[in-house]
Amino acid sequence: MHLSTVECALEYMVKQPAHFCFNIEAAHWPTQDILAERLAISSGVAVNSYTEPRSGNRFIRFDAAPGPLLVNYKAEVEVNMHAIDPDLQEVPLGQVPDNIFRYLLATRYCESDVLCAQVQQMFGSLPPGISRVQAMVEWIRKHIAYKPLSTHSNTTTQEVLEQRSGVCRDFAHLGITFCRALNIPARIVVGYVWFDEPPQDFHAVFEAWLGGRWVLFDPTGMAPVDRLVRIGTGRDAKDVAFATFFGDVEMTRKEVTVLEHDRREKRQQEAVAPALPTLA
Image 1 (tube, rainbow, N blue to C red):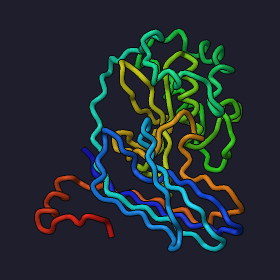
Image 2: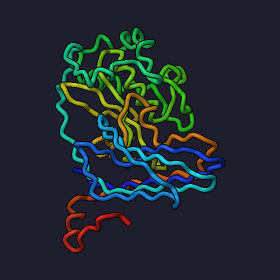
Image 3: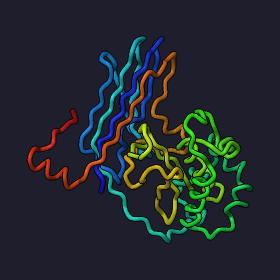
Image 4: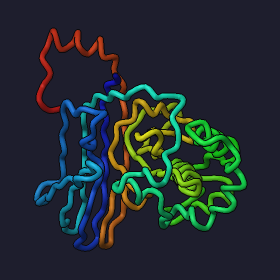
């Protein structure tokens, strides 16, 4: 069980009337409890909020007039991941549930159909199961260099393999592509998590469907996945963008903060002063 305070501050200069969609709030998800949260947006903005039933992803949408725009989200979230069985096996295709099947298909960034033969040659002979996924994760970690700004929002898995560098979303896309090419359902997960290398940012990992459950993996090796505060789950990065906007807009600031707490210390503090319903 892990307790974290997460926060993001986003600032934009809106040059012409624009429409925004944000996915920055902690998701409604079985492995995490949102103990307190606060969302603040520049005054005068009428916000529409909705939750996607299938993924638990939470979105806010609104129109913004020209001028500066500030979006701030802060939450206290408790994450409680279950232990992973080291002997989990791959699920035969005929037994993959209907609602999971779409995570077997190639997508815009994860060209598992194009790379299928190459991936089969690289990993097809390994014993199936969680150990094969872990072997793929280790290959990515060893052969792909983590280089900020080395890729852009349209970079695909093929391009990352060619240049052998990328950022966390590229590492996640590689893991997803490798899994799908071997008929293992896989999807991207984005969230808040503390890691050693500053500055903090949103972090992308992936999860594979093994033994009838989803299992998280971080090919970058930068973050403990059992502490990830989930924001978004999707087929690839286009499903989990933290911000999408339509119009002439310039981002002027992005700051992500993650603080981890010892749960025992938190309980001692609450015994002295009851927790407030919202975060300051």
